[in-house]
Image (cartoon, rainbow over all chains, first blue to last red; front, side, top):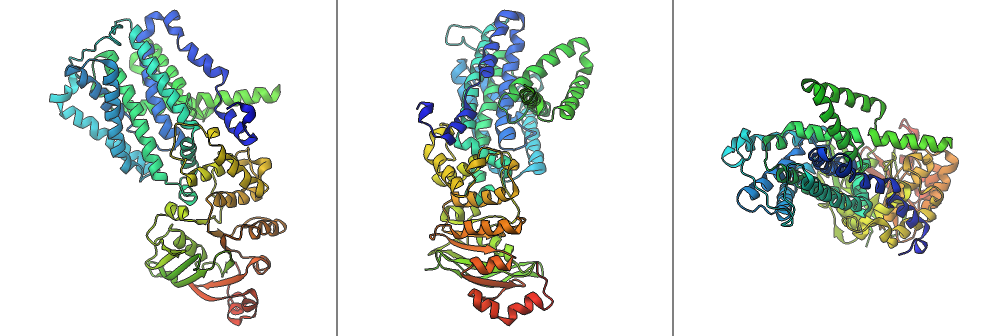
Length: 329
Length: 249
């Protein structure tokens, strides 16, 4: 369909989902670490994984307004599933990744029946409780998970039978970035779809949705399941690229971190989690190099400053700046 | 066959009776006004009919189907739709997006997440046509929260129309709108398709007598009387309620 065949309302909607030059620049820039910082590809890979995790939270929190303090449950579940599959003898990365994502999706679907019934504070408590529950279960099932020592003996085969996971992280970053990009394309499409519009409707006014005939809970269940799949993908990537899984993947700290990252970058903007992950992970890398024990002091400072001065995150602030510049021009 | 009927609808909150033995019959295509002093249970009745409250007793029929047990969104799918007394809209969605959303829900597109909105040209066009018919086309690309109050009231109605209602319940559609504009808003309502049966709550008696074919008067959770505007104007019980100590809200 050419844009001239579209009616005016369609053109308006089309303009909202069009790829902007800055987006293309962003994705091209993700290739820079290969050239500019080849010694930091391991970090870059961790950033890509964290960004994917934050993107999955953005789908439910940023778009549907579903607050979660236990999102690490799906990350960790994907992580352990991927780790165990490899440990038990199937080290093929891509199929392992898909199986782990599917497992996280099943967990997400089952828990979504509870999630969809609640909102606000009750939802925070339930997701928090669910996250703690799963973390403690993994801790006590040390025969399966390795407990506090982490899951040992994860051996990945070469990616596509060609690229080994090396110490420098070249394969790890390429792999993580590719998965992140594909997941991003799916998320972007979802946000532009009627379903994405329905999610925004739930965020804007959940009470009104039934009055326009919307099965809001069914929408929430679906979004939650998709987000769980993406979180599982991220967790599985971490397990596969580091060849180990620790209890930390299920921890409250990871749930809280991803929330901070998303708010830092700007929720409900698709790129918020990505930008937040870059800032957060690079800052952590730098600050913890200076004085590791005070690292959370700086993150706390950063968070307060962002909420005070950039209530819609870094991206929200940038958008405001752009509007200001345009109105001046 | 009435478009909407309730049989023996009862609801109480603790010892407070908010609806008692409500027998309401709304024929297809008619414009009914529901009036009564503040606290008479008008909004409660709409909440009961639309499923936002569960009645303690009684049954509700839409056409020939009983809908007493259906969830609110399922009732909307059957053609029973309401608007709200206070604007309950989607502040950051544009008017076009909001109405498109309602159309997509009706068409069953809203669950699909693999094709983007512009591909659903029929839904977008239908939403736009509704906005044009309510004279909202000029500002339909702006976020709802930036619309003038009167436009937001119209958007409430646009959202309801997007669900293709058979029965439309309007809870004070002109609440907060300046008097001159409220007549305009009601002329939009009276121009609605005659396939739609309309029940509206309204306090402005000029508007009620001008636009309603029949009037239902509620007092203390009960239907006091129902009749044509002439009947109601002549009914001394109604006069007692409104003039004899009853508060005109």
